[in-house]
Image 1: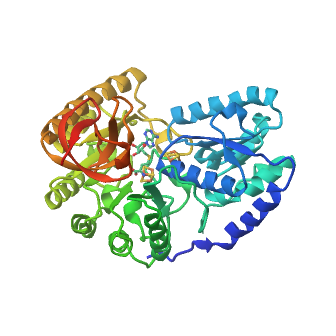
Image 2: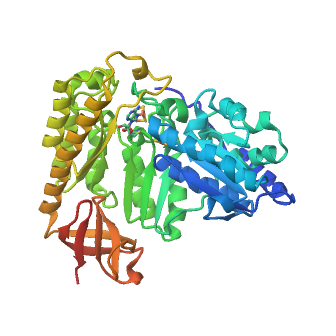
Image 3: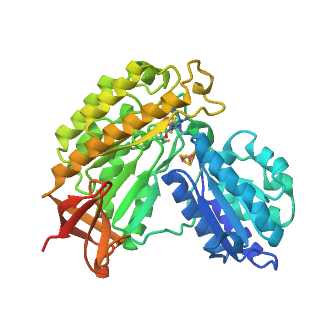
Length: 467
Ligand code: SAH
Ligand code: SF4
Ligand code: F3S
């Protein structure tokens, strides 16, 4: 077992708070902000911390980007298209600054944490005022100060990512659903993935700190907590403390939270203890996102996923045996270097047999600095397109069949808000994680209600409240 090398710092966060107060007193301090967020739930939650910090600095959110004094981008670089989309929008803010030269533009998130990225931004995008990587969000006040003072060197400095910062303010987007980070980083080094290099090594928060935060959320009226980690079921493996099943147990017993979800889980760390805890813990929702990536052992090996197709199947069916109503969703990559038609058909076969509720499907995107970017056997665009189209179609048929099977059943639904279409209808999520719409009044929003499934559309269920 490795020794815990992670430092935990409350002091650093407090020092930034004090700095934030002094910046607020400056005449040139920004008064409003706008954040554009890309990427996964970790980024969505980081944006909630960013908003929390800015709120403590006395700033108010501004929905129109071009009107804001502080324009922020919380970026993602998981695939090339994610990065290009963000970069296009960052470049466009040059136009905004022509009209409003005093507005500040800051780039945050995973893109900036890539080696040399902050420096490149500093040199090539003169209208960008500062950059800040994922490991140092708490330092936002200091970066804003450097930007106001025009100290470009300091405003783009690359930071460390091995410290855990406790006590950051958070401005949550929903009053009854909340994200809670339990571990940061990833040590898996899947051969295609940038996350280990942009989110750093795995570091688990202390169980007591997590439980304390969860208690605060429940006291605030939160019904559903989503535990976050790139590798969430590896919680605790970086130290001698409790593991993930013990964390789930403590959260249920000590906070009384109605619903617990967590993502993302790596199949190789889905232990029997975890499956048992999931099946016994009444707060754990009957849903698991379990990325398979491929159905071919050859591809799984090249991806460095450290499980085989048989191991994945074994885990999936062990879960279903323990929790017959569980819904399983997945991520799949097609056109990984060297993928043959036979390899791809094994992925189709995995999909046919696994009966996922849904799947996120991606075409392999080579990322600089990863092992897979250097592999021979790149697949041509037309072949990649053709494969992903077949895969999506196969999964669509299965999703439909799963939906059909649910008609007539009863689901516990957390009502989230008015449905986009249909007057007097609400939309919500079942324990299994599916979207559902049903007739109901605004007083139900934020509550968990029993709903009978009566039909479905292409992506969501339809239902009626049970009296
Ligand atoms: N930690 C999670 C996934 C994080 S990234 C896990 O291990 O499952 C989300 C998904 O993006 C991955 O599951 C993978 O399917 C996809 N992905 C990551 N890097 C990619 C790349 N270079 N090209 C295509 N898809 C990628
Ligand atoms: Fe990336 Fe693999 Fe880590 Fe997921 S487990 S974040 S895919 S390296
Ligand atoms: Fe993207 Fe970073 Fe998440 S690269 S997927 S925002 S961890």
